Structures are given as structure tokens and as C-alpha cells.
Image 1 (tube, rainbow, N blue to C red):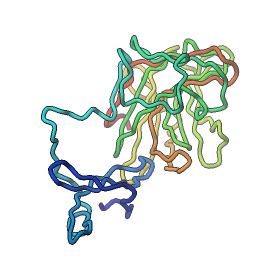
Image 2: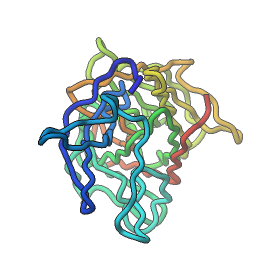
Image 3: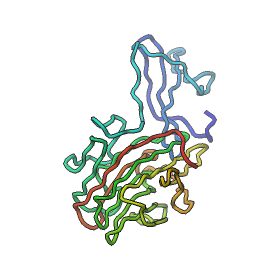
Image 4: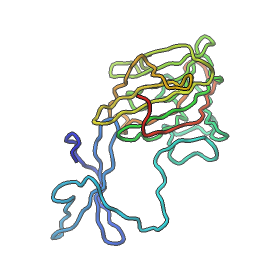
Length: 274
């Protein structure tokens, strides 16, 4: 498919009620993960022949056999009103007694301590979009206690996040990242006093041409400004999680249970600040 000699593999064969045949396979696309690929197929002398003239076509003409039916979106923004949108997924089996969705907020209460973001429960995640996307959320840190952190994360085994943390009774904006040689809790890239209890934070993903970089932002005085001192997190697709990078809203307590964090006005855009 003209994408850095990345092969197309692993999947199955499907047919439609009107007699058409396809292969449904996957292609590795760097940190964006494994992308589904639909390939036309036909039978010749009892053998499957995949593609067109031995190649995977870049586009496939398809049609729906269910008039009036539309596919639900795989990603999107959220005002946290009503029921949880179907495109969210928990990173672990959730503890519903410790999280709440609705009324314009998603709230995580910290019922136990943990060492880092990968151990946090009730983390909401969503797909990222190739070749790039931008996600933003307002984090309310008023319920954080000393040692608590909450924010928005580029989640994989080598994660990076922008968040709010409380230490010594004061709130700080923090950017942390886990790279190849960092400990499980990651390394602090930048920390500075939070401008208030509610901070709007964003993360931009750039997967184009396997650039695979994530960068972080904070909304201040009506404009986005880069945080992290110019740090661009080099994302890596690793089999330890066996998924591409996901957007994650998280919170956890490192010192004592009892705190909480709230998230408001989640925005998902196909582009964002650079």
C-alpha cells in the first residue's frame, strides 16, 4: 500500500449476502497501531485471489445493504451528559462505585493507592486517529489530595501525560513521560504552579509518515500554549500493550486514598495546535 514496506497480514475472509468476497486484514502503522484493511477478493479455480492484479487497492468501493442505516462513530467529543458514549473504553475492569459519568462531568474517586498511571483504574480511553488528532479536556483538581495526579495521557507502555498534581497543599501542572530507560513512574519533564483549580489540557498526536510524536498544551488567556519545554514524546508501538496509542483520561493517588478528580468538556479534533 506504499506505506514504508509495512506488510498487510492477520485477519480473515468474509462474504456478503449478494456474493461479494473480501479479506479483512491489518497493517502495522507505527505508533498508531494496527489499521484494518478491507481488500476485495475473488475465487479462481477454487483458490482465493486477493487484491487487484496482485496489489492492495488504496480505496474500495462498497455499499450498505441496510437502507437508512449509518455506522456509529468510532471516536468523538463528549459533554459527559446522559449515558456514557459507546466510543469510550476502560483501560481496566472498572470499579463503578468509584467513578461517575453524567451531569457534564466524569468523576474518578481514588479508592486505593497505586504507583503509576498504568495501575490506575477507571481510566477512560479512546482511539487515536491516523494521521493525527488533538484531544483536550478540562481537569478539575479541587478534589485532589497530596500525592494525587489527574490529566490526559498518550497511553501505551511508553506513555506521556499532562496533568494536575497536588503537593504540599499546592496544585501544579505537570508533564511526565516514560521512555525506554525510565522507571515505571516515568520522568518529570516539567512542573509549574497551576493557574487555578480547573485547567484545560490538550495532547496532539502526529502519526504521519511514522513521525509518531505526542506534544502537550495548556489553554491560557484564550489560546493554547505548548508545555513540557518543547518536549515531543517519541511514541513506540510495543507488544507489551498490543495496541496503538490511545487518548486516556486518568487519575490516581500515590500517597493515600480519598481524593477525586473531575473531567469536563472533552473535545476531539482531527487537527490542533502545533
